[in-house]
Length: 468
Ligand code: AMP
Ligand code: ZN
Image (cartoon, rainbow, N blue to C red; front, top):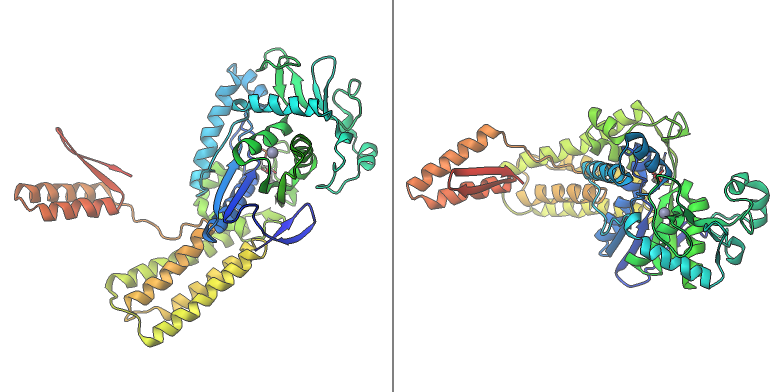
């Protein structure tokens, strides 16, 4: 499996630090608003990377944070006259709803910055001890950027060019920094802001330190993959490398993966520019599986321009797979038996599409080509599975389509929702069967309902049911 590594600027063979395991950290959202579909791109991309790794048999430890202390969260809390945690908890809950609706698996751990302050104080302390950081007179702690000789290795920037070229680096604390390139690890509180005690001042952490600390705590000092959007390469990820490697003396992440932007009118979609759609907005018009399909229809390192036409194309593409699976399910209702010799040959041929899919995904997660392989398989199934085909053959084709789609996180088999009236009728039939002591039929009905996600509960007041 090859992965494009931003560090080396080329595709490299993936060799895990520990056989059979993948340790992966992805920078998560700052939670002060509903997430927009630009934020959804890394979520979908890295969820797909994780799913493919799991499909290959790796045990994946996937960590993605919520940044829950930040200027924008504090600003919103002041506007609403509530505690900052009210804002962050609200939007973490909303974000989790959106993730579920996009079929993004929960990470192994979703740490929150405010719950990891102790670890941050420890790492900042270590950096000061080792001479990589210093406290200014007002209690702000800065990272001594020039003390880390590899600074710039990820973004391929040279320290002296940075000093000359990037004015924004000079903005804060210019007069008390030893060097304009130094960045903040800890800053003093301002009136009305949340703060924590520290050896340097009452205050709060800088943004970069949180990821170094959470990654270390949940995955260890050395990890396999670190991911995020390409806007994070500099300074966020460059600073994470400096903090983590200066503190541990070990290489931090082996592979750095960055998704390109989701654009609108060829400009980056962002909250600050106001040119965004939230995931919620999109869910009013489309099944979010269509959004997922749209995101994966381009390679993650290619910019993707959001447009109504491309969403319509995604809708058609997604529907093509769903319709094929639904037709195969229809055939399965009456099909029977094992494969004929002819079908065995065809089934072997169909396996070729799985190989094609894997080949595309092994090549730096080329989901665009992987989806093309699913389409070929769908076309093959539409042509070769027909009335009279054996059950084993139809089932094999259907399982292949569903499995490959599932690696992309695409739900292509629609569970038929049972109507309340049908459920009630079956429950009444079960009650009647029990009265007649026909427990076999009663159990059958309970199992049938369970298979459709309906759970029965026998209570004193009668039978109650709920959807799983
Ligand atoms: P933020 O909440 O801005 O810190 O962003 C959370 C994640 O979304 C980061 O990995 C960003 O790089 C990513 N991101 C934000 N906007 C976009 C966009 N328009 N396209 C792709 N990724 C984005
Ligand atoms: Zn981060």
